[in-house]
Amino acid sequence: MCGRYTLRDIDRARQYLKELRVTETSLDLLDRWRPRYNIAPSQQVLAVRASEDHGQPELVSLRWGLLPRWPKERTLEHNTINAKVESVQQL
Image (cartoon, rainbow, N blue to C red; front, side, top):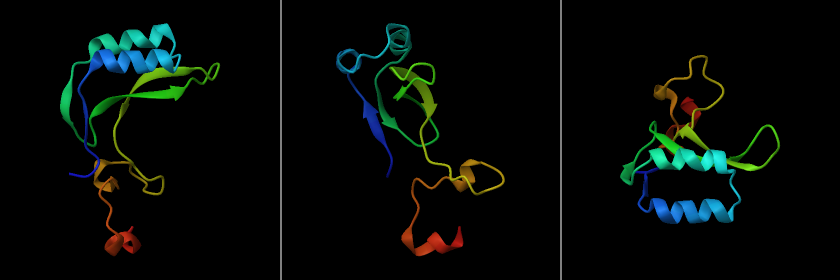
């Protein structure tokens, strides 16, 4: 169950985002989300990042997980969220 987390309290998330001074336009994205208790890799999630335009924190929807850069095809088959040290040389 590595890499899983929850989004339980939308109101608390909104409060944290305001403290981070997330842009008001991206806060509207939060209104479309509901609590989820088993967020797993490959699912869409909310994330805060610096905007490309002006560097201000913004809320965006992204796919949760880690896909390495080296495979020619970027598929979930190459998802490294549960990578094991025993097989790291096989990548």
